[in-house]
Amino acid sequence: MSRPNPEIIYLLGAFLYATRSTCSQRKTGCIITDNNMLRPVGIGYNGNYQGGPNECDFPDAVGEARCGCVHAEMNAMAKAPYGLGQIAFVTVLPCSLCAKQLYNAGVRKVVTIESNDEEYDEEKDYRRSSIKLLEEMGVVVVYIDIKELDRLIAITADLLSSLKNNENDDWW
Image (cartoon, rainbow, N blue to C red; front, top):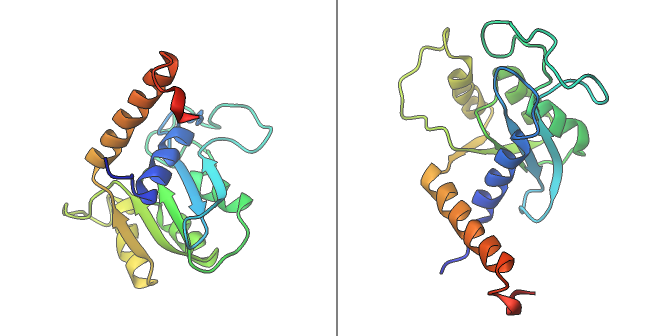
């Protein structure tokens, strides 16, 4: 069995952190690592301010980014030191504001599962328009096939099952 690519592991981690979101619109996650993917330097998910209520400011607002939640990328950047060449692993493409902030924070690579193959209307889909912005800034956007995440989830489930059943005493 081949070892999973670190990009896939960190991207799966971003999805796991997204589960902590209390946003009623969309749950998103972000992990920022150093340029070698050796250590995470910032972790975030969308939600309210630190210590605030675990709910959206405007839970009935229609449309993304109108609920008042702090974006996952913003939360991750708030915890990360500046580091040129950092890598952001995001569950969805960042909005244009987050894309600009990621660039200013030193991020030069964004990894996500969303594909850029689909046609998009920039006025209707601001996340897709962020692809163009990221490319203009020289940020590399890498797309991971969701099947790779599924494969890692299956491997992890098998490992946990074997540990639960004491079938893998040599693992430790």
